[in-house]
Image (cartoon, rainbow, N blue to C red):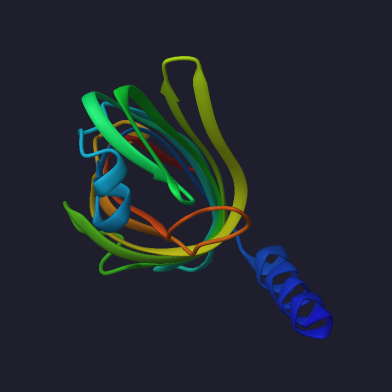
Length: 196
C-alpha cells in the first residue's frame, strides 16, 4: 500500500511540474442527503462552500485537489433514536458537518467552447462530525472516512478573467470508526472559476 501511495504521488508531481495552466474555483455549496444520511437528516442544506485548484496537464484535462464544508441540520419533534440496545424518544437536534479533502481528475469536453461541459472523478477523505442532541444527552461521532465522488457540470466563460461555474456532485463516504453507516449526499455548487 505504501509503495502504491508513493508511486501515485511521484506520478502526480511529475504531471503537475510539466503543466502550464492553473484552474481555481470557489463555489457556494448546497446539499441533499441521500440513503442512510437522509434517514438521520432529511432536510436540504443551504450551507456550504468549496475551494478547488487544478493544474492543467493537457488542454482538456486537469489534476488537482478540492476541499470544502457542508452543514446539515434537522429538528425532529419527539423523534426516536436507538443507540445500541437503548431507544430514546425526545425532541432532537441533529447535525452533520462534512469536510472533504479530495484529489481529482477533470475532463473538459471543449475548453474553447462558449459553454464548457466537464466531468470529474475524485477520491480522498471526508472528516465527518455527527451530533444528536436531545434533552441532557449528546451522542457525537467524529471520524475520517475514505470516499469518492463523481461530478458533472458546466463552465460559462465570460469576456473577463472570471467565469461562472455550476456542478452537481454525488459524495459518498464509507463507514469508518464508530460511525453507524455510510454517509452520502448530492452537492449542488454555484460559483466562479478562474484560469491562469
